[in-house]
Length: 461
Image (cartoon, rainbow, N blue to C red; front, side, top):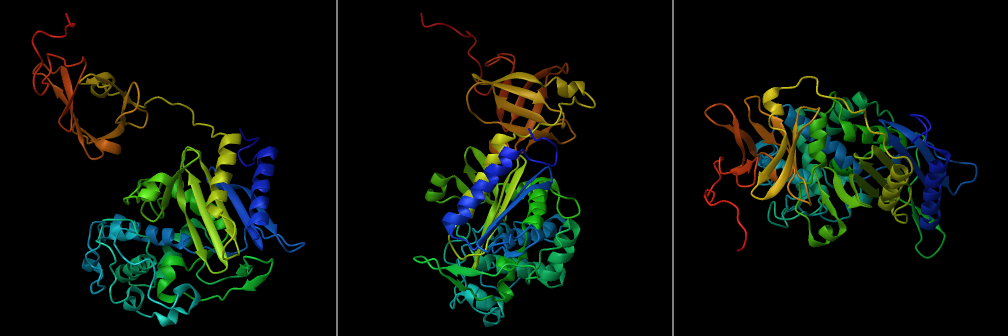
């Protein structure tokens, strides 16, 4: 429990500072800065630096690399929500002539379009963007390395294509659309495509000596939607809060939840690591928690944003070195430290505003064959179905307004739940995607597929 809604306990603050101090020292980062957000706002900020008397605060810009992709994904989701595209549309429908037109918008967002990981040489992160002025220069002569939709293969050119798609449908540069539709509405005044003072300089640290070398600073040009942005821990804490709850000025809670949902087939190694990818967001299981966010790197900089929606804790970690500290692990640890030391205080339980007798009649114990399930009517107006013992298929259902319900997640996502009534109006059973749920195991009064043996239940003898 926090001592106030805006302050973490002293022990928690010290543990957070200790974690980033170890990361900066062992990772040999010229500077490392971090923030933790909860309840929609930053509740802690910390920094460690190699320069005496200088400590970067929450307003100092660092380059955030591929966290930029999440911003681009939000712009694409806005186009979807406005009806300007469908995530199932092939790219060719909106942006013809790329050579990757059979890939869908969703596949590009989830890195399953089969595109190459990088643009053709020379290495785009350390050379001017003017070397790649057109999409063809980014995609190369053979854009597809893998069959479309078959595997998750992270692709920087894929997000360059999505940025071009935004420009095509908005009729304005990606940077302008980003500023008008995300940065200004969310108040991210210290996030920009070009560095704005105060900002950190990017360094390479020698792997075998405590020596540093300045990294070149390149404008990525066409590749900007994949990694151009500069930001601060203060701004990214606000952005993390948006990714948790949505903001109707930018994107609804339902749409950001869709972004957080796994959308890519995991490689075998990813299954072992508990990692996958959503729509512009990395998804992983760590320390028993579901974490979403994104990492980023460019020569001279590392960045990480990690969010646990369940715990209402987000962490942002930025460093100005090409390699060294493992910021993904640091971010996950910062979330864990707060979540374990100061667990989220749940909202008060509140009853339904209105009780519909026909809906209340659905509540209670049901049997699918011999498996026991409980169906609850929750205060948010949904139905929640879950096994009463052990693990099994569980889901929530939203009303269709005609007496039927639609599954929202898991095995029953999109499946229809239909209460079936007898001629006298009494409730007989539930039909869930052809599965029959009855009040008694294999209820002889219900229409159980295959019928019920008329001799009923019996013993061995």
